Image (cartoon, rainbow, N blue to C red):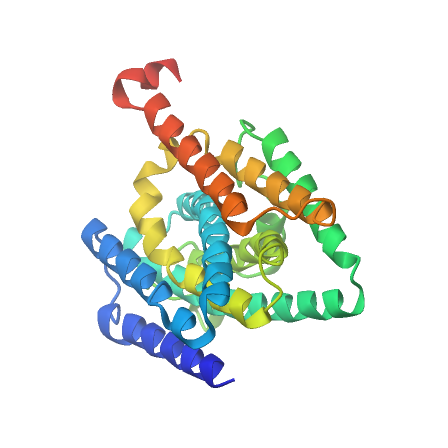
Length: 303
C-alpha cells in the first residue's frame, strides 16, 4: 500500500507539473518537446523502483505488461490522428484533449483491472475466456487491415452531434462556449468523448493481455498507467509517421493472437516469460522495420 501511495503521488506530481508548468498555456507541441517528454516517461517507468522494492520477478512482470501496453498504444495513435483530423483540432489544442483523456483513462483502467482480478479470483475459467477474446480480437484486427478508416459514418459521433448543441467555433480553445446565453459544446469536447470511448475499447484488450504475464493487480496497474502517461508525447512523436507504419497492424494482430493462444494452452505448455516477450518484441520490431522499408521515399509510388 505504501508503494501504491508513493506511485499515485508521483503520478499526480508529474501531471500537475505537466499541466500547471509546462503546458499552462496552449501551444504547439514541438517534436523536440515530444521526444523529451517521451524519454522522461520511459526513464520514470524503468527507474528501478519496483525492482528494488519487490524484486526481479515483479520487475520482469512489469516490463512485460508495460511493453505490451506500449505496443498497443501505437495503434491508438492512428485513432487520435483520425479524430483530430476529422474535427480539425489545431495542434496547439491537441495536448489539452489528450491530457483530459488521460485522466479518464487512468480511472477506467483501475476499474477494469479490479474487475478482472475479481473475476479471476471467483471464476478461474475466465482466464481462458480472456485468451479466446484476444485471439478473436487479433483475428478481427487482421481481417480489417486495409479497410478504409473514416469517422464520417461513425455512429457514436453521429449520435453525439444529434443530441448535443454543438458549435463549430473552436477559436476559444475551450470545451464549452456560451453563444446568445445558450451553452454549446465545441469540437474539442466531442473529440474528448471519442478519445475516452476509444480508450475504453483499447483497455479491454490491454488489460486482458496483462493478465497473461501477471496476476498482481498493482503491477498491472503500475505498468498500464506508466504506458498511458507517456502516450501523449508518443503521439506527437509518431503523428507525422503514421502513414509509414504499413505493417504495424499485422504485428499487433499477431501479438494479440499469440498472447491469447499462450493463455488458452498455458496448462499444456508454460512458455518461459523471456521467450514470450522476445517473440513479441521480435514480431513488432520486424513489422516496424518492414513498414519503414516499404514506405521509404523511393518506394512510396509502389505502395
